[in-house]
Image (cartoon, rainbow, N blue to C red; front, side):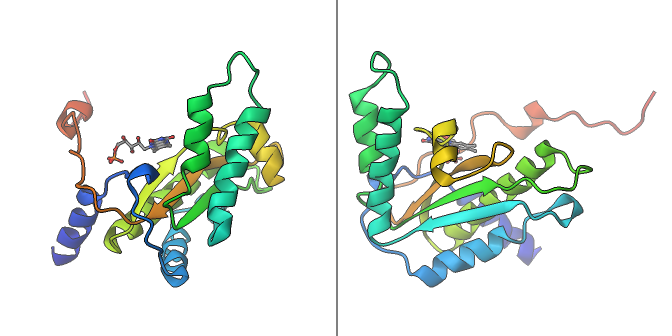
Length: 196
Ligand SMILES: Cc1cc2nc3c(=O)[nH]c(=O)nc-3n(C[C@H](O)[C@H](O)[C@H](O)COP(=O)(O)O)c2cc1C
């Protein structure tokens, strides 16, 4: 029960924190490695372990965010381009400590579906977020900007069959947490104790 209570606290107190409200304090690299080690323990069908990570630290955090904004400009038709969005992407790294890109690297085991590989990588992402919560680190899983676009995949040198699962912006914050769930889980659950 003690273990459950500790886990429950971490799970329910985890909140997405936007990089705009990070405070600029840096995370030690060894803590980032601890988060990646947790990610590596995600469930994996067929032991394919499809999660892959690129970690941006130091100057590369701001450089990556500038590059991301540039990818948005290059990959967007002029009539669809939004200068506010460009600036937001560009400045996402200003007060972040690290940015992790997580992607699914499709294996060659055809018995395992693409969806399973995506699910495994998403589970790895959640492990990062929970680990961050336990270490008092603020984190945001983001699929914004060009994360879901082919232009990001090309820039990362990924193959067609690989999929970017998201960015995680990491840092610290002084902001209070926002409220949690809107709809109780009972409203989303059907219990069956005997099939007719
Ligand atoms: C796959 C995925 C993509 C997300 N992408 C974004 C994003 O691009 N921008 C953002 O602000 N939040 C993003 N989020 C975070 C959600 O907004 C957040 O989880 C949701 O508001 C619930 O809040 P909580 O995480 O604090 O419980 C994403 C979450 C997931 C799971």
